[in-house]
Length: 533
Image (cartoon, rainbow, N blue to C red; front, side):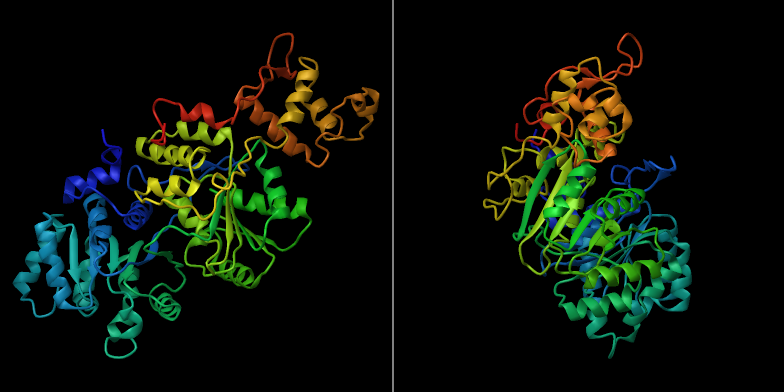
């Protein structure tokens, strides 16, 4: 079967609109809408807080500004989600001619749009409200002047609106201050109706217009900015295999060009990473950012990072929403995001000034195992397809990423595969496996930590750990980092730590790491592949 026809969004596009192909930017926009609305297969699953043990949700992208040229298929960006969302989609147009044209196209596509406009008879309006109340229409078309009328707004509040779309967004800036003052009040619509998912479209948006639009429409909401072309030629992509992500992160930042943005999947992870880096790097210019912070805290951190030349910010995807720092030189993902769409948007925070920048992804065996544990089939497929593609050392990283979006790219402007600088080994693996093999079934975890870490505790001398050829082999590592690496090797099956029997709590050597571990094993899994095997 054709790989594209196996994809959920492609299936739905074919089923509802007889469209066989989604453009990359359409996939980005549609995915964000479905994720923010919590649609099955797109809603991010909660993860357990490693400190409190409680479950917490990922941050999402409920508000976005989409910049697409005229005739590029923006209508599908809200029409396809409209077919999948539980409530209706409210679309605001600036002109009646655009409403009429869109209504005609929707009818042709099998929708039954409700049109709210001036001059309608009360009988006609009541029929429209009955249609909306019964759920017979999935899309409501209107203009700001009509929607903002008190009697209309009060009825809209009773409708189940899942998604607000603002077409020709630039008019907010160009006309709102002159002869269309109603455009300055559009935010009253989503506030009054309590609409969380908002998408604004425009064919052109200079920095001045974007700034003014965000001020008028989205003050305090930080919208994501989605351009037409998802490829960022000035970004160099790298993948690092890791036994201890904390150790490798600190080592990367030591060499990285700053400012640096580190993405975590969870809010707690962002906070813990900031504290860890502050300690091991002995720096104060490190902060964390996520959606759980107050508006004042967010503004303070945004202002600091915006003007920082050497700062390090650890964040969830919440930072990627409309914060216009152009000179981020390095983006590091400590945790893989849930999809290729999320990765391209988050890594795309680097190099907005069009100068060269780096996007580095740290991956471990645990990342793959957590992917196979995902219960939702669509979520699992999206996550694992992304991981398999981005960790395939036989194909260009850029081409692999763009291929998942349905884009073709025959050239690469920078990745570790094409530059032949892929690092297939993992930091610390030779030292740790060498030590465990030399002390097979004799060493405890604590003995391994003190020996490899080169500690000078009394027991090191009493038990003569210092005589080991591996003493101080990882003296630049912290003990928690070495323990993290031991746990990773246990997960990989290279070592074991029996809980019972004659070798209880001793390190047992099983086998050496396989070539290109941990990725070669998973890429051959029959249920999931990147489509390249």
